[in-house]
Image 1 (cartoon, rainbow, N blue to C red):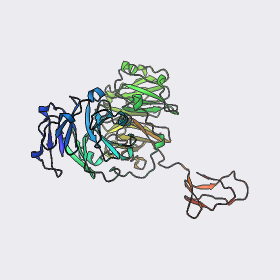
Image 2 (image 1 turned 135 degrees about the vertical axis):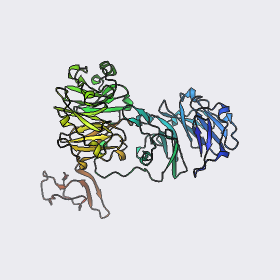
Image 3 (image 1 turned 180 degrees about the horizontal axis):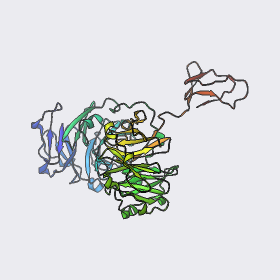
Image 4 (image 1 turned 180 degrees about the vertical axis):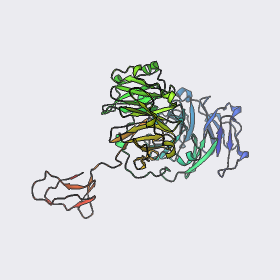
Length: 522
């Protein structure tokens, strides 16, 4: 296995069992001018090495290490591929990731000419903002994403995104979030290579090589089957609108507002259509003019929009209807209370609770006066293991607290402050919702923004699938089989001679007849 090294400008060789193979090192890169080495790929004879400073792919003879200039790619800069990072080829096309463009460029391997029809253009929309190396088995293309530093929650863990080679679109079911690697300390996957059964992943922050089996479709840990996920309620159009790093979220049922900590802006969307409602935005000029340069959590009573700020230790206030800063409604007592790392916030209209990710607690404030009310603080988070609280939400009885590091949502009784574990949401990791940054609920669903994926994931508060008939089919005995959720009964509007059905369970089998029958599931 050959590993590039940006500092030493060489290819280090290793035996797959682990030991160094010094005799096969390739030391001819620096003399060739190939000093900022990134991705590497070989066909067994030629080895190509990407250089992100020279905007070039250098070529060397794998056995002798001699440079092969006639096989090099010097057309990258002209194509706009001026921050190349990773390489992979199927033997006829060479694909090259571009960190800045969040895209994968395609070239003919023999002629080095561009093949734009084979580009992968959907990385940004997928949340794959820091693409590095890539590898494919011919059907699925995996792209390493190193993650990035964020003032929101320290380092945003990287992951490996999957794309269908035929359609060049995201195949999220085959993503690897490498929880086992994260548990071992891997945070920033940069290099990828596989022998078909094991995927080797280099971690640039930890200077280590990790491995994981890829025989299964996904190595993610199984999540409890609680039916909480409601993918039909997901919202994934933020990236294409520039809302790349969503934090807080709140809605009045018609419009959905999503803060962006990188843009210092709060984007507005029409819930029914998913389209932007730009006239209801709280733009960068408004927030920065108020001093609100790091918006994290948002909540509103329908008149005033309250916004926490990661840097200023205060809660800013804006008129929801005219989008102007209202200083008289701001809460400036967070720093005095010790709430110096505010994240999510939620209020019942009288008390405002604010999560602090450093103190592992929820601070309470009187919404009208802004004064700290310590008696209502919730300090049971740390004992529960909820040590990285990010966003919060409530139905008035239970208060939910998302944990940035655990990828789960903890539940607490709002009055007693005690844990209510049966109301937890444990499926965030399985879902891929690994950077929960904002939370809002309409009483039926819980929506959680993801800082890294630029997506809003939906969960059912009831953790139950909705009742209804899911399918009607015919079995081998020519009987009609009805599959449903809930209980089945005859329709109350049915007239004529029929056999009434009450509280049947799924699947329900009916013998076909000329008599029409109608059923409802509820």
